[in-house]
Image (cartoon, rainbow, N blue to C red):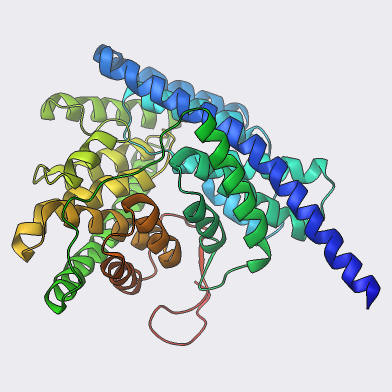
Length: 409
């Protein structure tokens, strides 16, 4: 009895210490990454001629990854596989995704940051697990803690980061043994980013809808539309990648042509709204202003950018697509445009990553809790209707979304 208590206490203290170290390192590197992305974005806005170097940047990214092709695929799916199975994560994943994502944002590729966050955090966590000589099961936990740490440092949403890191691996099955490490890592990393003066992702909702039966129905309809858009989003990115690889087998040629296409579309639309993450457009949508075509154009830009081999992630583009779509359709449903944009923001995130609990928490951390019941309804509807689609090929859907049975897809 005493031995069991001592072992339990020993493990508790171990994870407190290990998680603090993970959060500290992930917070420092995540903050540096955030600063680099901001500097790259600012430089592009001030010197917009740099977008003409996008084809060169794409070729350089492909070259860097080709140098380490023997390591296998170095992407977010590799991180998920490392938690699900005993897949290793080469440390080179960290500098590669760091540099390539900064290049993508600097030169105007349409991508987010969360892919880099998960890969940097997962790579750091795995490497620290080896240094601490953790067993395979504990390595799975420390990888999730690393994911949570960098995600929290980048977005300023520590609770969302912790739950997302647990929830994204196997849909319908949470590994609660990782809860304490993920929470501690996320909080420490968030505080580190705060010390660096990094502003968390926050939006002010001026006209959050009341929880009336009429608004419940309107949000249900909007969330249903967003769930269908989630399918289009995931399907579009997957199919674009598939056909780009089919018709342009040479990676360098595929990257060059994809960059030229993004550059051409930028000139056609005569706007930088669809380059980079598009945070300014999200802000405008939540203030009630979005172009009718913005959500579809961003989807096209993102699909081409990622299929061409540029790096970053799809979640911030999903925020863009969801918020602009919600803002545009709001008048048709009789909802406030800014509030509908916020519903779209959260619904798209929920549907493409299949993480309803993290999505509800995200709505609270980002929008302050106003209209939380309506956000919860939107997440539930989007999760249920978006089907078995996902941004991540390695994500495993353990339980059916609508029936009480295991499906293992």
